[in-house]
Figure (cartoon, rainbow, N blue to C red):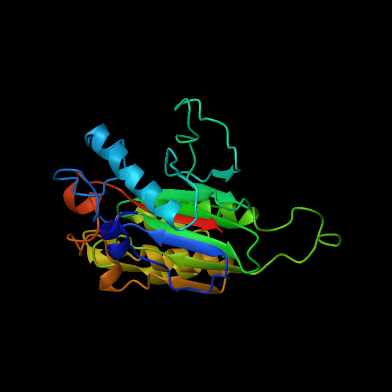
Length: 276
């Protein structure tokens, strides 16, 4: 276990049932040199691979001290695919010997100990749990993945795993789902073009309230607010964590959070969730 890592990470305060555990790392507790200092968990951002491997091992050891298995890292592409993790998820074809590297932007499991993990540095990490403790999931919600197509984005895709697919007249009642939103780029820092606003408003008109004009045809977007709207529209009412305030903004808190928008060359944090 790494005491510095554990002392500074975010432990969600939410409505998850007993037996659901989660954490979100910060930039503290690792071995990487600037500008990746110090707990960079991303192998794809130009950091020394040995330092990243050491950082991932520190996270794995911390999770093990909490009764979890190893974190499974995805190849995130700002899409909507959700990977179902099992106790023995096969090795990814891109990373022989480990299940890391599957192309997906969300993962879910019903297997105790399997750690759903997503990496972020401005995009929004969303952790989800069935209120009956039967399933957990983690999603990487950048604006493209969150918006998706035709109103179906990464959150809608991951929620399908929680709900029976049988005909409604034969399906058991779906369990209530609770959600926690982690740190992301805040509404005072996330300037976007009109195409981003249109991608959300066309499928969910109330999303217009999450955009404020910033001049020259640009808009300031509330990414966490947009995620709350999409979750609420999908029937998730118990949502905790990021409320859009300054303390949650990755751009505005450089000593604690990595931010690609702020630094361009940046490390990655991880949000993890598992069943005991």
